[in-house]
Length: 445
Image 1: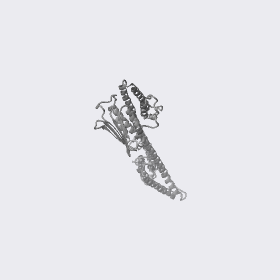
Image 2: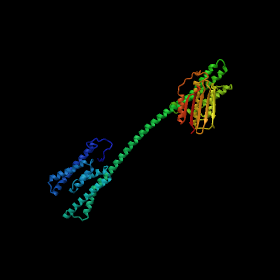
Image 3: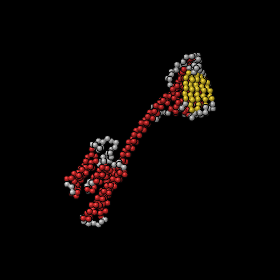
Image 4: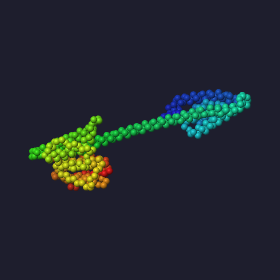
C-alpha cells in the first residue's frame, strides 16, 4: 500500500484505506468529476471508433472512476490514464494520478518510468492528432507548429503534476522526520529528567549517609570520652577534689566542642545559603582542643581557657593520630602506637578514612572494653596503607564500661562503608585471647 499524505503512525480513522473521512470525500469528488469528464469524452471516441454512444459513455465512466483508487494503487491509476490517452480522455485522471504517484513513497525509478511513459503517450497522441488536422487542412500553420504543440502539451500535462508531487512528498517526509525527531528528543529529555531525578535522589541519600557517618564518628566519639571522664569524675570527686576539678574542666571543654560540631552538622541538613558548611570548622579541631585541655590541666593551668584555633586543613589526617591517642590516654586507656614503613602523605580522603577507622575503633574499646590495653598499628606500604586496632581482654572479663555507654551498632558498618568506598578491605572480629580486632587496608592511590 502506498500513502500520499496520511499520518503513518496514527491508526486510520476513515473508511477502508483512507486515514480520514475528509480524504475519502475528496477522492470521491475527484472520481465523480473524472467519470463525468471521461463520459463526455467517450461520445466522440465511440463515434470515431464506430461504437454505440452508450458503450463509449460507459467506458468513459468506468475509466474515470479508477481515480477513486489513487491513494491505494497510484500505479494502476497512471497506467489506466496512459491506456485511455489515445482515446483523448482522462486528462484529469492523468494529472491527479501523476501527482499522487510522485508524492507517494514509491522508488524514484518507478515514478520516473511511469512519468516518461505518460509523457511519451501524450506526445505521440498530440502529434498524431495535430498532424491529421494539418493534413485535412484544419490547421493552416507551418510544419514547426505540430512538434511544438506536441512537446508543449506533453510537458504541460506531465511535468507540473510530477514536480508538484515530488515537492509535496519530500516536504511531507521532511515534516514526518522532524516530527519523529522531536518525539525522540522528547523521549530522551524525559529519560534524562528521570535519570537526573534518580541521581539527585541517590545524591541526597548519599549525603544523608555521609552526614550520619560523620556525626557518629566525630560527635559520638567525643561524647563517649565525655561520659568516660564523667564516670571518672564521679569516682574521684570526694577522694581527690583537685583532680576532679581538672576532669570537670576537660569534660566541659569537650562538651563545647561537641556541641559546636553538632550544630555545624545539623546546619547542613537545613536548606538555605546562610548555613555554614560542615567543613568551615574542621573536625580535627575537637582532638586538638581536647589534647590542649588535657595538657593545660596536667600543667596546672585553666583547662577552661579559650579553645585553640582550628587548623587550615580540610579534614583529619594520619598526622593527628598522636593527638587522638592522647585523648584516649587522658580518659584512662593504655594505648600503644606502632608505625611501620616510611611515613608519607596520602590523598585527603585516604587519610581521613584511615583516621576515622582508628577513631571509631578506639571509641568501641571505650564502650565495650574499658581499661583494656589497646595496640594501634599503622603500616605504610608501597601501594597501600594498613591499620589495625586490637584491644586485649578487659581487666574484669565480661564487665562493660562503668560509664554504661550505649551502642547503636553503626560503628563497624560505617567503617566498612568508608573503606569499601575507596576500594579497600575491612575486617573485624574477636581475637582468640578474648579481645577484639579491627583491620583495614586502603589503596594509596
